Image (cartoon, rainbow, N blue to C red; front, side, top):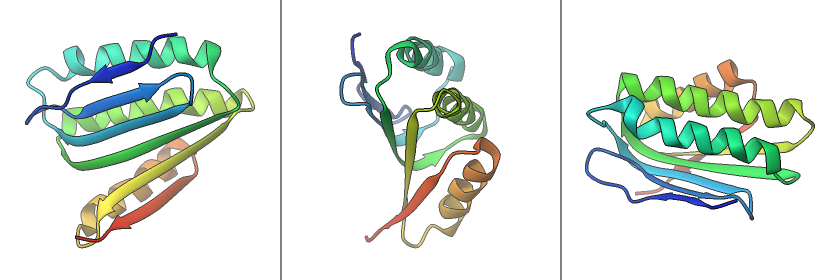
Length: 126
């Protein structure tokens, strides 16, 4: 299976999903003009990945900002990863936030509650 690599822009996050290692990373800002157009290939990739995933998947989320429409797709990404957990796989979410950004820390906690995944919430020192 091919990896999914999408270069980040001022409006879209960088995506680096490695099928072989099971390490997935999203970073940057997510305020795309067309959220569906940006995130649909990501969700399709995750669907295919779920068929070939190894025993452990780690997703590193290093978003500095995202809009409301992006938040729905981020939750959908976590739901797809939850299906791996339901299949007996190990899924680890590492949610990074800037140390003084309490809102982003709380957003990670909210996603943890809603998704049913274990999150490691990690402050980044500025």
